[in-house]
Image (tube, rainbow, N blue to C red; front, side, top):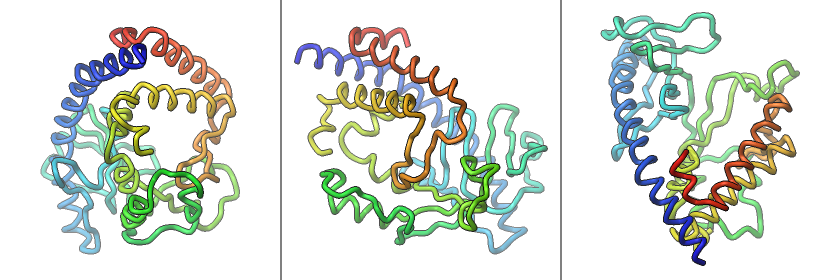
Length: 270
């Protein structure tokens, strides 16, 4: 119990001192980027009336925006961009099959055509949730499925170079809103931030166990060279990745997990 409490203390300290600062910095960047992107999308709407921008601020967060890293973003929009009032700070990235913008020579925004499918659930994810698993409960499952999914017009990299089916080579399923709904409550979101980062298992006092569990599960996936998508288990997120890279990542993750488990203060050195 004492060791677990010490780990929880160190994780909360890491979250407060490191993760919160990173969140604030990323939030500032997002506001700066979204100001430019919003202006770009207004121009797209003028040129193409059928286009509706999905980029909107709701409860201090942006809908239609996926943060991939502190300097790379993906916003669910449609059509390409020819001009905007920020043309001095925005450039199109050439030699790519996707529409990408470089803003202030620092940030990359990928513009992706998409259909928002609210209130329906794809047949390919019909097996979710798995039976006999207590989490998520029926009410949360209903909320998640009500969020629906997004249908993105983009290449599925795991199928590149293969004979793909009619539904997989042009469209990709994305469950951003559904995933956000699952992260609500307990320490799930905090655990995710620490990594970047059912019921009582997600109490604050269990943060250390949950973090170690996720790292060990990641090691298992890396060693097996297979990581099934949560909603689409037949989709392997590691497909096409070099075996040497997966082995190297497994060793690094194991060293990190062992260090955190045996010496919680090692978080101060990360």
